[in-house]
Image (cartoon, rainbow, N blue to C red; front, side, top):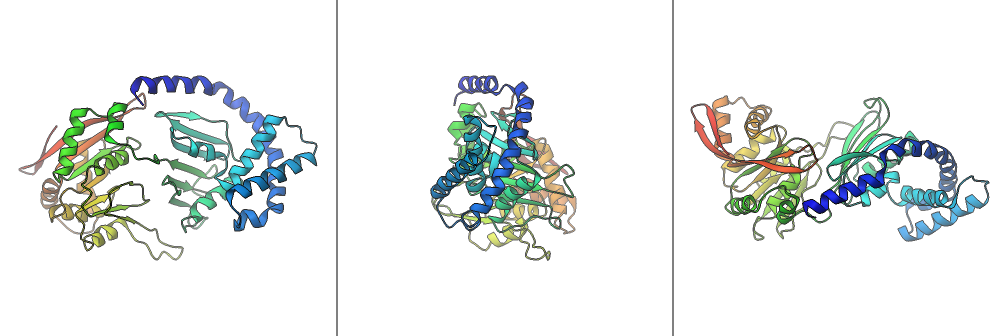
Length: 402
């Protein structure tokens, strides 16, 4: 999608959205939700085996839900028009087969983030901007059921003893959930979506994120086995950039990817994907990013790609870059390329090994070759704002060159 087409689509979306009508729509939704809640409970009673055991296909389940709901409409004096009845049927199908009111947003390829602030307020990010929606969960219990459906799907749990969790959907979307008692006004769920087809460097050029010259340079750097850090703030596109850069790695190289929630989408043949694991309810069984980085060194990797370095694993990652794993890639949250170096110093100290700052800076300056810094502009677009070379040390200072 070119820049002009993107601007046109944003305008069309905002014209159709009519944000001023959202609050009025929510009031009508509350009336409909009372009816939907009653039908929902009856539906669960009638279809409990199919809903919970899932012993029939999605298509059969959709037909059963439609038939049962239409029967419930017939047996009840329901003050709804045809459009509202059809909407209730669609919503209930989404509850059973999908993820409730957020299902349609998950299916919209142009939406990149879904933010559930509480059962009654859902926001989306589309074209780099945040918009309110007129969708809502029936109540807190409804939202918690959908949350449980998501986290249980990957063998995790969430309750008052474990009130926050990171999870992912089958399509790779990253989910963060936090509930009572930490979330004061009700459960909060944030879903970061990723494109089913990973973006390519051509896409980033078309979006205006980078230039052809910069793209050619970065491709040469990856193929030349330069160690690269993608940096930026939250939502600036660091993981997307990491995916794009990773696509330049030759197909015959053995790559190990490591992440909290497996987000990296590499299409090479020789890719090994590792994912960290949180502790269980007994506070046992945790496998950290650092554990996986250490283990990956025994897997004969040509390159190691870490989705995000945020703790003591920074030391192991730097050592890997310095000991024959050239061309490794990672991301770091930071405000500038210079800030990347400061953050890496802090994270190395988190490893619990008493190293002098001078030695840490030696490790960083010899390991990291290039920093690609991302920024998110006021119009919502992302840009490569700096491509910075780490030149080495002069005294105790690491020198950089844009």
